[in-house]
Length: 118
Length: 111
Image (cartoon, rainbow over all chains, first blue to last red; front, side, top):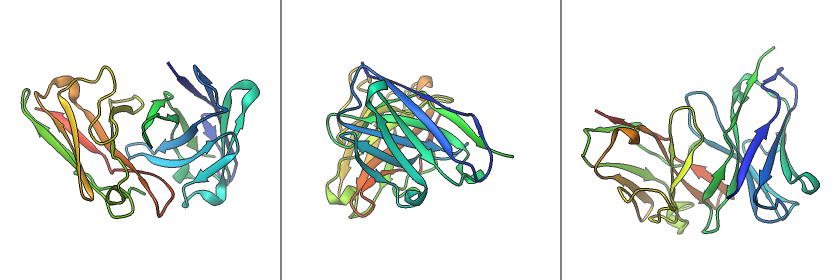
């Protein structure tokens, strides 16, 4: 069974860069699709982007100018960097793995709340 | 930004049947991309409930069923139980965005 665990700061100042890490167990980040999704408090889910085969990325057009997703194979982790943070970026951030059928998200981390505040 | 539209809420008494609609467009559901459904209990991560329009992962009760038609999809819960009270999201892939799209979410309340 694949398990994912997000880690990173719970508080980020406006204009700073958010860095989150997702640690994967039960599968290798060298293969398949690894995603980041976020959910502002009380609101719906928003896809941020994915990386597959360790180097090919695809990002939500609304965030593309600020997002970088990368893989760290030695630690079996993948990470998210989001620059120029504002209050609108306050959300629970989830990492998730695409399933084997199609574009479903089969396995999710528990999520980590990131608050943007000075 | 949610590209797929769902009703904000549905409710039903225990034992009843409720349905949740998910309306997309020709760049996602209508483009023959599958629809998937997630259940999000309060304070927890979303959990895959239905994949590939109508398939249940192991462990999901057969009270949950999904269907897809044209540019829309539907999730049905039969024999509603108190433990089904949660938020439900549909999801597909959009070829104009080249990425995942989610529904606006529906809160199911068991009366």
